[in-house]
Length: 254
Image (cartoon, rainbow, N blue to C red):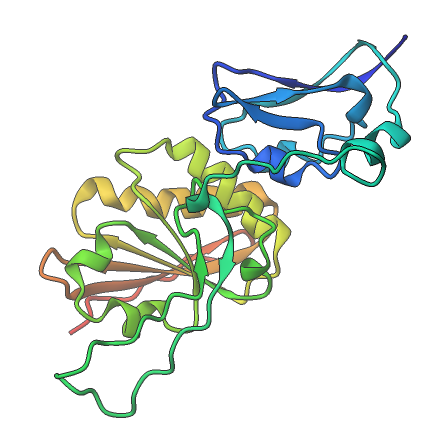
């Protein structure tokens, strides 16, 4: 055996979501007893394609003595030979979907429910993949997760025509949000970014997340920062530029 790169899984961090198993083309990772496990060194090519899909930062690459990567064994393992691979477990709530929102009616009808403008799933910033197709060249909406509850017309005013990532800067790990959003900005040619948060002070942390994420991405771009009152009214819109442009601010919205 030679020393080479092999995947290492920290089971203490793993939550068993199955995304790594789903994205491992060689089938080297399986969910066993609720945890991701490397089933054979010979199935792992050591390239680490699974790393960017782990939401818990539980996967790393280590150098150690390991059996050589065996392409023939992988083919047999995946069912191209005499053996068939077992189906991979993936949490259904994490499966990515691109949706087609219903077009908004020309005139609203009180007797009919408003159509959803959601264009993809999942939407939580912790769960989305930075390289998902629904982030490529889009107008991105970063929304605090309380905003849709406060705003009766959130879908029509903000969600329509945009991809979305939601989160709570008070209850969740802001540094994780910064890194994830930075990767989304870095990996995609976004047309625009809009940040919508509540007027309560802790919620404005979402603005800081966006500002630091853009700076960390290495790109220069501006975003619209929108503040919503607890009554669901837009009370402020500001243009925030990060990078080479100066920050410009707008006043209160009537």
